[in-house]
Image (tube, rainbow, N blue to C red; front, side):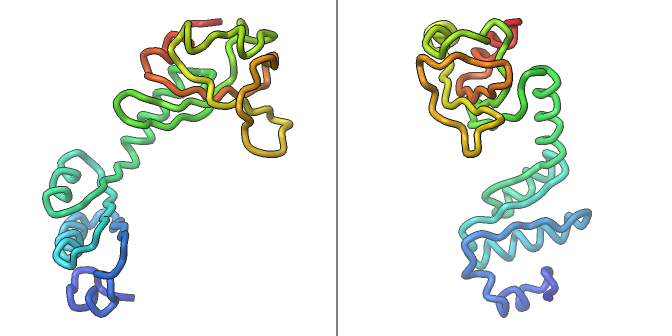
Length: 170
């Protein structure tokens, strides 16, 4: 164990040779700032820092953080999306409004084949995969003549505005 506010201790640990360092020091923000400063001086290539607000994010970026994680903010955004899209089970933000969403199909999709849905043409979204809960492995690439069932999980990629149009379907 080492005192992270002691630069010499960090050097003795060889932390400067690490590719990535995650800084999660809880409520001791001043310690996080000092540690990020030392890591920057030691030329650590990637420094990921957990923060509690936007002001902290700005400060650690100035000090040399390469990535900032704001768990409460991320959780709130995810919860809001999942409440707003009740069929959604999970999602991944890719940036620029692009998402990958996993969710159950609208009732109007059930019984139709993948090709009949014409998701790219009608909604400008891509059906990346279809997962069946009874399936032993990962989701499979969509098969054009396979009908959608109500228990299927569709994995869709597209812009949030286009995915919102799917939300309107019953």
